[in-house]
Image 1 (cartoon, rainbow, N blue to C red):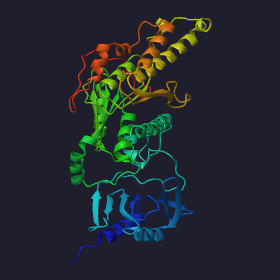
Image 2: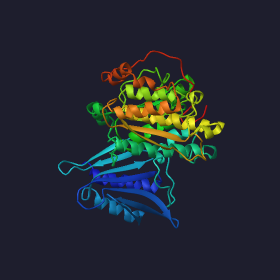
Image 3: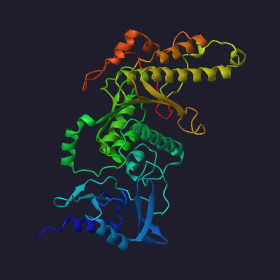
Image 4: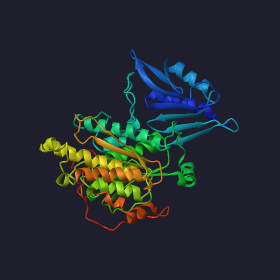
Length: 444
């Protein structure tokens, strides 16, 4: 018996999934004709009680949406396969089907494990601009953010909003670093994925999330790179509390999160390989400075911190004129100490060759710990004398004798931190007491 044509098989799978309710989404990519859409995303929606396919055509600068009755939509997709687009990905709750149609060579139909086993909402209006789509449901549910059907729990609404905002920020920072891939690749079969992983291992990004707590944002970072962008990535969560590490690793194994791992350790001393990005959100007091130094030491292109407590500088803070008359108020002195601590952190990062940005992470109505410092390495570290002078002048003005990042001003320390470890080796700084940490959303 002759083998069925892969295109016919794919269309049959599409029609069957729409009929039995297992359809999740469909993506057409790899356009063959110039001037058309770069990608088409199809999802099933109910319009006036009738099932339709909602087609979103992604162009370079705009999106266009068109709704077709299911039968008409299946016929339209069949016409596009091989003629207008060379790749198609059908997601269902049972299997994912990938159709590859090279211009030279035979079409192939590949089968994969499903990205999700939950059907998405069928309503026409969907939340826009979120990276937490249906493919994030398994780990969000595992962490207690959503219920079994994907609905955000009322008590976790702020946390869900924080995770979503964090991924939005991280996606922009990744683009600044040159890591962003606008169009996610279709998933490969297991065998080819392993082979491709070996061939591209040199391009695998390594992200370390220090003091990661329960792992909300660690899972989120992995989700962004691995599932949304389908890029080779290794995400390492570091946390001092062994019970949280065990629980996070258990969930990672449960959802088969390839490239995601958690380890017990302190920010200053946990063994780590050279990293592309180091993240530390809501590490207490000088633990944020420890994270900044580790990021520089490990050669990170991107360092992201969201400071928590600010205890170091307030006892040292002088009252220089003309600020003395306002700094005698305790609340203003406290806020000045916080501002000065984080301002100096940004200046130290600039001295280390980074372009630093300080901005609001989430609205203060959700958490008062909402400041974020993001730094992307741009220039040779510790070479700009003016950057060093700005730090020394600011410290002198306020009478500060010590800041946790002061070792960066000392020549020997600079030479140590600019001597990056050999690729593939683990860095083990001298052990030191574990700092007080909180999870990445500010919870004890």
